[in-house]
Structure formats: C-alpha cells, structure tokens
Amino acid sequence: MDGVSQLGLPVLGIVAAAALTFYVVSFSELREKSFRDLEDSENENGGFDSYVSSRKRRAIRKAEKKSKT
Image (cartoon, rainbow, N blue to C red; front, side, top):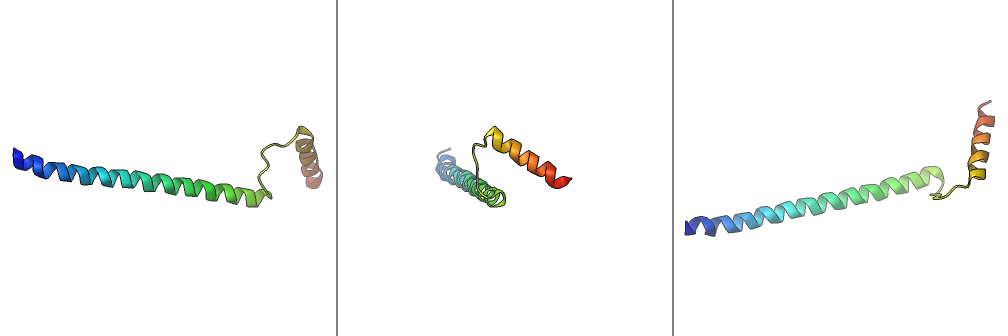
C-alpha cells in the first residue's frame, strides 16, 4: 500500500497541475477573444458609444428611413 501512495501522489499532482493550466489558458484565450470582438465592434461602428440619447436615436432612425426611400 505504501508503494501505491508513493506513486499516486505525484501522479495526482501532475494531473491537478495539468487541469489548472488548461483552465487558465482557456480563460485567458476567452478573455482575449472578447477584447478582440469588442475592438472589432468599435471599428465597425466608428467607436463605442455607451449612451445614445433618444434624440440621437430618433435622428439616426429618421436618416435610415429617409435613405431607404
């Protein structure tokens, strides 16, 4: 039984380190992808506008309707 614990503990440590590394890398890649998507959306829309007033929204809608007709 002593030999099993001597072998099992290092193996368990290696598996735990591999799982931790996998999750850290996965989450960092997800975060980078989110930032890239945010930058792409900023470039497409001409900048990120967190707050658009109702007047501006109405003006944009009116201009879009006018351009369609």
